[in-house]
Image (cartoon, rainbow, N blue to C red):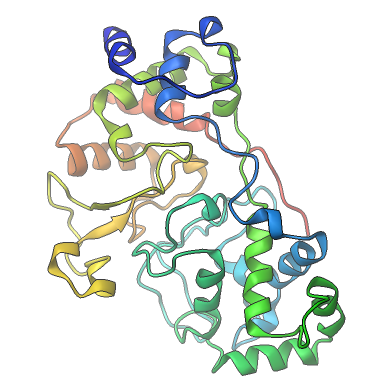
Length: 325
Protein backbone atom coordinates (compact mmCIF):
# COMPACT_ATOMS: atom_id res chain seq x y z
CA UNK A 1 0.00 0.00 0.00
CA UNK A 2 3.06 2.31 -0.07
CA UNK A 3 2.07 3.45 -3.54
CA UNK A 4 -1.19 4.76 -2.14
CA UNK A 5 0.43 6.90 0.52
CA UNK A 6 2.99 8.27 -1.95
CA UNK A 7 0.23 9.24 -4.35
CA UNK A 8 -1.72 10.86 -1.54
CA UNK A 9 1.29 12.90 -0.53
CA UNK A 10 1.68 14.42 -3.99
CA UNK A 11 -1.97 14.66 -5.00
CA UNK A 12 -3.73 17.98 -5.07
CA UNK A 13 -6.67 18.91 -2.88
CA UNK A 14 -9.77 16.92 -3.65
CA UNK A 15 -13.34 18.06 -4.02
CA UNK A 16 -15.91 15.65 -2.64
CA UNK A 17 -18.67 16.02 -0.12
CA UNK A 18 -17.77 13.28 2.35
CA UNK A 19 -15.49 13.87 5.32
CA UNK A 20 -11.96 13.04 4.14
CA UNK A 21 -10.86 12.19 7.65
CA UNK A 22 -13.41 9.35 7.81
CA UNK A 23 -12.16 7.68 4.63
CA UNK A 24 -9.66 4.93 4.08
CA UNK A 25 -6.50 6.19 2.30
CA UNK A 26 -7.50 4.28 -0.83
CA UNK A 27 -10.93 5.91 -0.80
CA UNK A 28 -9.35 9.33 -0.52
CA UNK A 29 -7.00 8.64 -3.40
CA UNK A 30 -9.79 7.23 -5.55
CA UNK A 31 -11.84 10.37 -4.96
CA UNK A 32 -8.91 12.52 -6.07
CA UNK A 33 -8.34 10.51 -9.26
CA UNK A 34 -11.89 9.61 -10.25
CA UNK A 35 -14.73 11.00 -8.15
CA UNK A 36 -18.37 9.94 -8.31
CA UNK A 37 -20.54 10.28 -11.38
CA UNK A 38 -22.68 13.43 -11.39
CA UNK A 39 -26.38 12.69 -11.08
CA UNK A 40 -27.25 14.67 -14.22
CA UNK A 41 -25.64 15.07 -17.63
CA UNK A 42 -24.70 18.36 -19.30
CA UNK A 43 -27.69 19.77 -21.16
CA UNK A 44 -30.29 17.87 -19.16
CA UNK A 45 -31.58 21.09 -17.59
CA UNK A 46 -33.37 21.76 -20.88
CA UNK A 47 -35.03 18.34 -21.05
CA UNK A 48 -38.73 18.00 -20.29
CA UNK A 49 -40.62 14.82 -19.33
CA UNK A 50 -42.40 14.93 -22.70
CA UNK A 51 -39.14 15.20 -24.62
CA UNK A 52 -37.53 12.39 -22.64
CA UNK A 53 -40.58 10.13 -23.10
CA UNK A 54 -40.56 10.78 -26.85
CA UNK A 55 -36.84 10.06 -27.05
CA UNK A 56 -37.30 6.80 -25.20
CA UNK A 57 -40.00 5.68 -27.63
CA UNK A 58 -37.84 6.68 -30.59
CA UNK A 59 -34.89 4.73 -29.17
CA UNK A 60 -36.97 1.57 -29.59
CA UNK A 61 -38.66 2.60 -32.87
CA UNK A 62 -37.94 0.08 -35.65
CA UNK A 63 -39.55 2.28 -38.32
CA UNK A 64 -36.31 4.28 -38.32
CA UNK A 65 -34.52 1.42 -40.10
CA UNK A 66 -34.63 0.37 -43.73
CA UNK A 67 -35.78 -3.16 -42.93
CA UNK A 68 -38.28 -2.03 -40.31
CA UNK A 69 -36.84 -4.46 -37.76
CA UNK A 70 -33.99 -2.56 -36.14
CA UNK A 71 -33.88 0.29 -33.64
CA UNK A 72 -31.19 2.07 -31.65
CA UNK A 73 -31.74 -0.60 -29.02
CA UNK A 74 -30.78 -3.38 -31.44
CA UNK A 75 -27.09 -2.47 -31.22
CA UNK A 76 -27.29 -0.64 -27.88
CA UNK A 77 -29.52 -2.87 -25.80
CA UNK A 78 -30.89 -1.38 -22.57
CA UNK A 79 -33.53 -3.96 -21.69
CA UNK A 80 -33.27 -6.70 -19.05
CA UNK A 81 -30.21 -5.10 -17.49
CA UNK A 82 -28.69 -4.44 -20.92
CA UNK A 83 -25.27 -2.84 -21.09
CA UNK A 84 -26.13 -0.42 -23.91
CA UNK A 85 -24.06 -2.56 -26.29
CA UNK A 86 -24.43 -5.91 -28.06
CA UNK A 87 -22.60 -9.24 -27.86
CA UNK A 88 -21.01 -8.96 -31.32
CA UNK A 89 -17.60 -7.75 -32.37
CA UNK A 90 -19.22 -5.47 -34.92
CA UNK A 91 -22.84 -4.69 -35.71
CA UNK A 92 -24.89 -5.91 -38.66
CA UNK A 93 -26.75 -3.07 -40.34
CA UNK A 94 -30.39 -2.97 -41.40
CA UNK A 95 -29.45 -3.96 -44.96
CA UNK A 96 -27.21 -6.81 -43.80
CA UNK A 97 -23.90 -4.95 -44.09
CA UNK A 98 -21.27 -5.57 -41.43
CA UNK A 99 -19.93 -2.57 -39.56
CA UNK A 100 -16.26 -2.07 -38.82
CA UNK A 101 -16.29 -1.22 -35.11
CA UNK A 102 -17.69 -2.49 -31.85
CA UNK A 103 -20.77 -0.65 -30.59
CA UNK A 104 -20.05 1.70 -27.71
CA UNK A 105 -22.41 1.77 -24.74
CA UNK A 106 -25.09 4.43 -24.57
CA UNK A 107 -24.91 4.42 -20.75
CA UNK A 108 -23.09 7.57 -19.61
CA UNK A 109 -22.41 8.57 -23.22
CA UNK A 110 -23.45 12.17 -22.65
CA UNK A 111 -20.71 12.69 -20.07
CA UNK A 112 -18.00 11.92 -22.63
CA UNK A 113 -16.04 14.64 -24.40
CA UNK A 114 -16.93 13.36 -27.90
CA UNK A 115 -19.03 10.59 -29.41
CA UNK A 116 -17.99 7.51 -31.44
CA UNK A 117 -14.60 5.81 -31.23
CA UNK A 118 -13.10 8.42 -33.58
CA UNK A 119 -14.84 11.45 -32.07
CA UNK A 120 -16.63 12.43 -35.26
CA UNK A 121 -19.65 13.75 -33.32
CA UNK A 122 -19.28 16.36 -30.62
CA UNK A 123 -22.46 15.62 -28.66
CA UNK A 124 -25.41 13.25 -28.28
CA UNK A 125 -27.66 15.12 -30.71
CA UNK A 126 -25.02 15.07 -33.41
CA UNK A 127 -24.31 11.41 -32.71
CA UNK A 128 -27.99 10.49 -33.03
CA UNK A 129 -28.19 12.03 -36.50
CA UNK A 130 -25.62 9.65 -37.99
CA UNK A 131 -26.82 6.03 -37.77
CA UNK A 132 -30.37 6.61 -39.10
CA UNK A 133 -29.20 7.55 -42.61
CA UNK A 134 -25.91 5.63 -42.56
CA UNK A 135 -26.14 2.93 -45.28
CA UNK A 136 -24.28 0.36 -43.18
CA UNK A 137 -26.31 1.08 -40.03
CA UNK A 138 -30.06 1.82 -40.02
CA UNK A 139 -29.98 2.58 -43.73
CA UNK A 140 -32.75 5.10 -44.41
CA UNK A 141 -32.27 7.04 -47.64
CA UNK A 142 -32.67 10.51 -46.13
CA UNK A 143 -33.77 12.56 -43.15
CA UNK A 144 -37.00 13.23 -45.01
CA UNK A 145 -37.75 9.52 -45.19
CA UNK A 146 -37.26 9.24 -41.43
CA UNK A 147 -39.74 12.04 -40.78
CA UNK A 148 -42.29 10.61 -43.22
CA UNK A 149 -42.11 7.24 -41.49
CA UNK A 150 -42.77 8.88 -38.13
CA UNK A 151 -45.71 10.81 -39.61
CA UNK A 152 -47.12 7.56 -40.98
CA UNK A 153 -46.93 6.06 -37.50
CA UNK A 154 -48.80 8.96 -35.92
CA UNK A 155 -46.01 10.69 -34.01
CA UNK A 156 -47.30 14.21 -34.61
CA UNK A 157 -48.99 14.63 -31.23
CA UNK A 158 -45.98 13.37 -29.29
CA UNK A 159 -43.67 15.81 -31.09
CA UNK A 160 -46.05 18.71 -30.51
CA UNK A 161 -46.14 17.86 -26.79
CA UNK A 162 -42.35 17.70 -26.68
CA UNK A 163 -41.80 20.90 -28.68
CA UNK A 164 -44.91 23.00 -28.00
CA UNK A 165 -43.37 26.30 -29.12
CA UNK A 166 -42.22 25.07 -32.52
CA UNK A 167 -44.08 26.02 -35.70
CA UNK A 168 -43.17 22.61 -37.08
CA UNK A 169 -42.62 20.12 -34.27
CA UNK A 170 -41.97 16.93 -36.25
CA UNK A 171 -38.51 17.59 -37.67
CA UNK A 172 -35.29 15.62 -37.90
CA UNK A 173 -33.59 18.07 -35.54
CA UNK A 174 -36.28 17.46 -32.93
CA UNK A 175 -36.00 13.72 -33.50
CA UNK A 176 -32.30 13.76 -32.66
CA UNK A 177 -32.76 16.18 -29.77
CA UNK A 178 -35.40 13.86 -28.27
CA UNK A 179 -33.08 10.87 -28.58
CA UNK A 180 -30.38 12.92 -26.86
CA UNK A 181 -32.77 13.92 -24.07
CA UNK A 182 -33.55 10.27 -23.33
CA UNK A 183 -29.90 9.29 -23.44
CA UNK A 184 -29.10 12.02 -20.93
CA UNK A 185 -31.10 9.96 -18.41
CA UNK A 186 -28.78 6.97 -18.85
CA UNK A 187 -26.56 7.53 -15.82
CA UNK A 188 -25.29 4.32 -14.25
CA UNK A 189 -25.36 3.49 -10.54
CA UNK A 190 -22.80 1.18 -8.94
CA UNK A 191 -20.99 0.10 -5.77
CA UNK A 192 -17.87 2.07 -6.64
CA UNK A 193 -19.74 5.34 -6.13
CA UNK A 194 -20.96 4.05 -2.77
CA UNK A 195 -17.34 3.37 -1.88
CA UNK A 196 -16.29 6.86 -2.98
CA UNK A 197 -19.10 8.31 -0.88
CA UNK A 198 -17.67 6.74 2.26
CA UNK A 199 -18.93 3.16 2.48
CA UNK A 200 -15.70 1.21 2.91
CA UNK A 201 -17.65 -2.07 2.85
CA UNK A 202 -19.02 -1.44 -0.65
CA UNK A 203 -15.89 -3.06 -2.13
CA UNK A 204 -14.49 -6.45 -1.16
CA UNK A 205 -10.88 -6.94 -0.12
CA UNK A 206 -10.04 -8.30 -3.57
CA UNK A 207 -11.78 -5.40 -5.30
CA UNK A 208 -9.77 -2.95 -3.22
CA UNK A 209 -6.55 -4.77 -4.17
CA UNK A 210 -7.63 -4.49 -7.80
CA UNK A 211 -8.29 -0.77 -7.44
CA UNK A 212 -4.87 -0.24 -5.88
CA UNK A 213 -3.19 -2.28 -8.64
CA UNK A 214 -5.18 -0.43 -11.31
CA UNK A 215 -3.74 2.83 -9.98
CA UNK A 216 -0.21 1.67 -9.25
CA UNK A 217 0.13 0.10 -12.71
CA UNK A 218 -0.77 3.44 -14.27
CA UNK A 219 -4.09 2.47 -15.87
CA UNK A 220 -5.65 5.66 -14.51
CA UNK A 221 -3.38 7.79 -16.70
CA UNK A 222 -5.94 7.27 -19.48
CA UNK A 223 -8.90 5.84 -17.59
CA UNK A 224 -9.40 8.81 -15.31
CA UNK A 225 -12.21 11.06 -14.11
CA UNK A 226 -15.66 9.94 -12.97
CA UNK A 227 -16.16 7.75 -16.04
CA UNK A 228 -12.72 6.14 -15.70
CA UNK A 229 -12.29 7.10 -19.34
CA UNK A 230 -14.20 8.98 -22.02
CA UNK A 231 -12.10 12.14 -21.65
CA UNK A 232 -9.33 11.92 -24.26
CA UNK A 233 -7.98 10.20 -27.38
CA UNK A 234 -5.11 7.77 -27.05
CA UNK A 235 -3.13 5.67 -29.49
CA UNK A 236 -4.12 2.01 -29.48
CA UNK A 237 -0.80 0.25 -29.15
CA UNK A 238 0.95 3.12 -27.41
CA UNK A 239 3.89 1.02 -26.17
CA UNK A 240 3.48 -2.37 -27.85
CA UNK A 241 1.81 -2.40 -31.30
CA UNK A 242 -1.83 -3.49 -31.49
CA UNK A 243 -2.44 -6.25 -34.08
CA UNK A 244 -5.18 -4.45 -36.04
CA UNK A 245 -3.41 -2.17 -38.53
CA UNK A 246 -6.42 -1.67 -40.81
CA UNK A 247 -8.53 0.70 -38.72
CA UNK A 248 -6.56 3.92 -38.25
CA UNK A 249 -9.14 5.46 -35.94
CA UNK A 250 -9.33 9.22 -35.75
CA UNK A 251 -7.07 9.60 -38.78
CA UNK A 252 -10.05 8.56 -40.93
CA UNK A 253 -11.81 11.71 -39.68
CA UNK A 254 -8.96 14.24 -39.66
CA UNK A 255 -6.87 12.92 -42.54
CA UNK A 256 -3.76 13.45 -40.43
CA UNK A 257 -1.18 10.70 -39.99
CA UNK A 258 -0.58 12.10 -36.50
CA UNK A 259 -3.98 10.61 -35.60
CA UNK A 260 -3.19 7.10 -36.86
CA UNK A 261 -4.61 4.50 -34.44
CA UNK A 262 -5.96 7.18 -32.12
CA UNK A 263 -9.26 6.25 -30.47
CA UNK A 264 -11.41 7.63 -27.70
CA UNK A 265 -10.49 6.00 -24.39
CA UNK A 266 -13.65 4.10 -23.43
CA UNK A 267 -15.34 4.47 -20.08
CA UNK A 268 -14.83 1.59 -17.65
CA UNK A 269 -18.15 2.12 -15.91
CA UNK A 270 -20.04 -1.19 -16.30
CA UNK A 271 -17.08 -2.58 -18.28
CA UNK A 272 -17.51 -6.14 -17.00
CA UNK A 273 -20.85 -6.20 -18.84
CA UNK A 274 -19.81 -4.64 -22.15
CA UNK A 275 -17.83 -7.41 -23.86
CA UNK A 276 -16.48 -7.71 -26.49
CA UNK A 277 -13.71 -5.19 -25.94
CA UNK A 278 -11.64 -2.69 -27.94
CA UNK A 279 -12.69 -0.75 -31.03
CA UNK A 280 -12.71 -3.90 -33.15
CA UNK A 281 -14.42 -6.12 -30.59
CA UNK A 282 -11.50 -8.52 -30.79
CA UNK A 283 -11.55 -9.79 -27.19
CA UNK A 284 -14.56 -11.30 -25.42
CA UNK A 285 -12.92 -12.17 -22.10
CA UNK A 286 -12.46 -9.44 -19.47
CA UNK A 287 -9.29 -10.95 -18.01
CA UNK A 288 -7.74 -11.05 -21.48
CA UNK A 289 -8.75 -7.46 -22.12
CA UNK A 290 -7.00 -6.45 -18.89
CA UNK A 291 -3.84 -8.34 -19.92
CA UNK A 292 -3.85 -6.93 -23.43
CA UNK A 293 -4.45 -3.34 -22.36
CA UNK A 294 -1.62 -3.42 -19.82
CA UNK A 295 0.71 -4.84 -22.46
CA UNK A 296 -0.21 -2.70 -25.47
CA UNK A 297 -0.70 0.58 -23.62
CA UNK A 298 1.83 0.33 -20.78
CA UNK A 299 4.23 -2.42 -21.79
CA UNK A 300 3.41 -4.24 -18.54
CA UNK A 301 2.93 -7.97 -18.17
CA UNK A 302 0.56 -8.38 -15.27
CA UNK A 303 0.65 -11.40 -13.00
CA UNK A 304 -2.42 -13.60 -13.02
CA UNK A 305 -3.21 -12.45 -9.49
CA UNK A 306 -3.12 -8.83 -10.61
CA UNK A 307 -5.34 -9.61 -13.61
CA UNK A 308 -7.93 -11.31 -11.39
CA UNK A 309 -7.82 -8.50 -8.85
CA UNK A 310 -8.27 -5.75 -11.46
CA UNK A 311 -11.13 -7.67 -13.07
CA UNK A 312 -12.67 -8.04 -9.63
CA UNK A 313 -12.45 -4.28 -9.12
CA UNK A 314 -14.23 -3.79 -12.44
CA UNK A 315 -17.17 -5.76 -11.04
CA UNK A 316 -17.71 -2.93 -8.55
CA UNK A 317 -18.50 -0.74 -11.59
CA UNK A 318 -21.44 -2.96 -12.62
CA UNK A 319 -24.54 -0.88 -13.30
CA UNK A 320 -27.49 -1.59 -11.00
CA UNK A 321 -29.91 0.80 -12.73
CA UNK A 322 -32.44 -0.77 -15.11
CA UNK A 323 -34.56 0.46 -18.00
CA UNK A 324 -38.01 -0.90 -18.83
CA UNK A 325 -40.07 -0.36 -21.97
